[in-house]
Image (tube, rainbow, N blue to C red; front, side):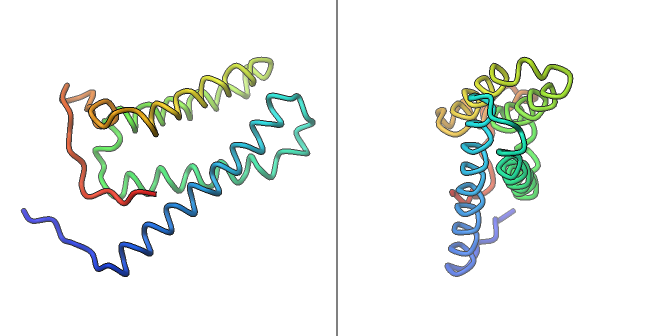
Length: 136
């Protein structure tokens, strides 16, 4: 089955869209992370938290719609693990700083690890090539 290609205009719209989402996500992470790590009152960083959660959810949805296999590749599995760690903020609020640091370190592996690691399928026990990715 031949993959359909997208027009140059579609490519740039998707590329800029994903880059914009990622930029807002990093802004949200920086703002909320600073508040968490420095013990700033939650009311002062909550808007950043909302930005991070909305954009993070949108980026995950983008990946799943693009290729459902993202969910079984390490990049998806580690991202879901980050969401589970975020959920631990509720029952373990005294560990928010430690959890945030672990999440941040996992993010580096997901974003900057070698493609053989990121594309490794935990189900197939081998690297799976993804459908055409739009970087951003």
